[in-house]
Length: 114
Image (cartoon, rainbow, N blue to C red; front, side):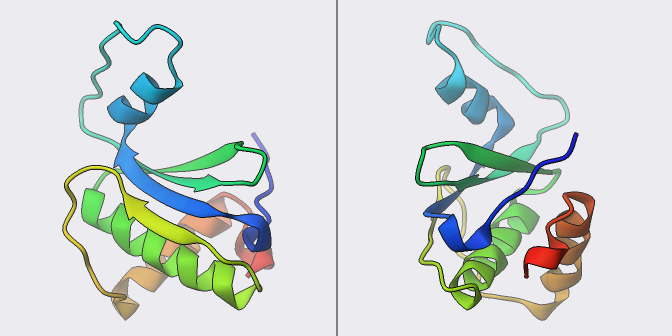
């Protein structure tokens, strides 16, 4: 599957569990979702309310990638905010997480946008 994400137009970035993402997207709020092993998603939300999800196996990695993506959006002239939806510890930008973000962006074919 190919998709494109224009970083300049990203309005907000969320990090949440895949289960929570599925609950929010589900029309039937009575359904329960469970992901084993746990998966966390970074959602980049566009002005038209469409979003792109990048999966992570670790919540801290998703948070670090989100912080770097906010920085990338700002470098592209956009203005994005970051919100960890779950009770997630706030982390500062770490240079060790940049290779992880670049790997995810390459897999998603976004590296040319940065």
